[in-house]
Each structure stands twice: as structure tokens, then as C-alpha cells.
Image (cartoon, rainbow, N blue to C red; front, side):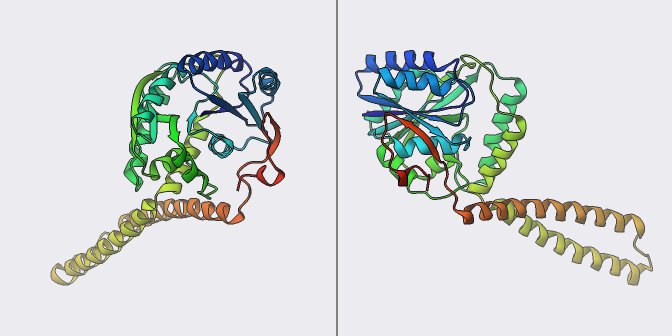
Length: 316
């Protein structure tokens, strides 16, 4: 069986077409499959439409959360409740083509445990957003201990062994793309052109993207902390050398070091560096605080075509 995990939030305009596209592709592929829709507390008719589909097609399963628990937790829940030998993540905005699924399956049957889509072009996005995406991958790879493939989103196939490994990870600050790469299983990419949204308008703001980038870095790297430690050591060494130089000028040539400008410059630099260092440290402390509370990753409010015992309605 192949599981398709489909996160959704306020996608009433796209759900009917998603059903048509997925049904056409999967039936043509001759696969036994299920679709697990994880609804992040949509305020439109997304849930109503999904329930209607579930009533006529038992291959569709619908899970609604009590509130918006973020896309990464929504995907994690889908992996948790999926049953397939392989699991495909496909968002309901139709920016990723379901037609690519047979090629994913082909690579999986060749022995790859992870098969992901690689953007060759991003239709419907502003140049600024595309530039931000390119910068994000390069920046996180510079700071992270693991190297993420560039221009790769969440559209991918994972073997059951990969899914089981992800399900065993207990962290609360989830960066699923990094977690999947961290597992180390054999992987490959398939290039495709990312389309504009099927209908509606995306709600992801630049502030959210920045927050997502910070969370991603804190989840998979301590290099920023090491950077400030090494930078601090360098500044301390430079201070000692500068003091020695000023003493040399004073005793050897009777020249006093320039006073106020030097002090002001060093003071402002110290304040800026200290503030930035405290900010980085605060992000890591905040991550530790979130992990220590051990709150559920998600809370299931409603489930259709899927039996979820009470103890499994909360993401561990």
C-alpha cells in the first residue's frame, strides 16, 4: 500500500481537484493506496468537503486538529497515522504535480528509501521569495552539521523504515526536512517545475519564513554558539594585542593612544556583539524550554474513516 499524506488548511477551492488528480494518477499506476488528510483547523469548508469524499471513497481518511499546529507537525501526524509501505507527502495547494508520483514509485522500487522533488523553476512566486529560498538553503547548509539538498520542499516519498525512524524522534521543535535527511537512508531527487497555487492565496508571510529559518538552524546546528565562542576568543586576543601595541607606543615613543574615538568604537562593537550573542543564546534556550514542556505535537479533534484510540490522539 502507498500512503499519501496531504496537509491542508483553508483549501476548499483545491480539495475537489486534489481528489480528481490523485484518483486519476493512482488508479492509472495500479496502486493500492490511501490518502490521509491532516487538517490544521481550517475555518472554511475544507473539512466538510473532505468528509463528503470520505463518505464515498473509503481510501480517503480525514483528521482534524483542535487548532493550527504548524505544517511540520501536521506532516508528522500524517506519518504517524499512515499505514503504507511507502509514504508520499503532497500538499493540497497543487503546487506539486501528482503526475510525478509514478516516477517516485519507480525510484523507490529501484531501492531508494527517500525520493524527493527538486525545483528547477518556481512559478507564481515573486523574485524576492525565490531569492530568499535560494539564500535559505545555502545559509542553513553553511551552519548545519547535515547538508540539505537545495531547492527541495516537502514533496517526497519515504520508505516505511524512514517513516518509522521519524516517528521515533521525540523533539518538539520539528524541522522535518532536516530530520528526514538526518536518517541517512539512500536518497535521490527528481527535477520538476513547481507550479503556482491551484486556487486561493498562500498565507505564509516573510515573518513566518524568517521564524522557520531560525527554528531550522536551532534544530540542527550549534555552530552559531560555537561561532560566538570563537569570535569572543578572537576579540579577547585582539584586545590583548591592541593593549600591548598601545603600551609599546607609550613607552617606546611617548605616544598616547587615541582616546575617545577608540573607546566609543570598541564600546559600540561590544554592545552589538553582546546583543547578537544573547539573541542567539535566547533562541537555543527557548528551544530547550519548548522541549522540556513535552506538550503534544498535535491534538486530534475529529477523525473520519480512521479509528484512533484516545491515547493516540495526542502527538507524543
